[in-house]
Image (tube, rainbow, N blue to C red; front, side, top):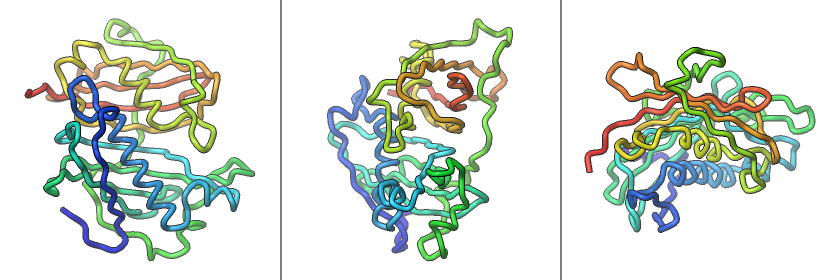
Length: 259
């Protein structure tokens, strides 16, 4: 599955002590940061990273994101990320990722959908303003996963006993280049709503997020999760993060720990 095309960006990352969790493996937050860092570095090499886009009154906003992990790397492991712009779909610029271990075995994949925003008008514009031709687009896919609208958790339902809520305040350290909450902070918040016994006995297999609206410094947000009891043969949770409006919807899939 290793991609040899010149349009594919390769980046190596070492797993440091600050990247691991209590299981001595890379946390999903760290892996998400690596994935998004590789996207940013590749965009910079192509001439359209966020700081470069600011100069022409444009920026990138992550709209949809999916990551699945087959095997979490351990402390002192080295992984390689491959990433590439994989196509344009309406207002979305798609980007794919593959995560390899030191032996070039695939240990995870990710997909993302980005929107170009006009910073003066605060409105989305078509990605062709950046991708003026398709020379940088590599149409291979890291997986067959489609990034769709998620259901989230509806308000005012009767199943409160299967619901977990946590309230958070947006810290200055949660902010990104766009002065909005970073995408990984949303991951932090939604995972904090998963019951402790699930986290102790299960491993996060997949996480999928729809980013819907921006949160800013000083905002108070509520993260809500609910187990999907109708999921067939999967331990699945739906999530919503709210402030004055819905900020994000997500879905996580968990599997029993094997070691």
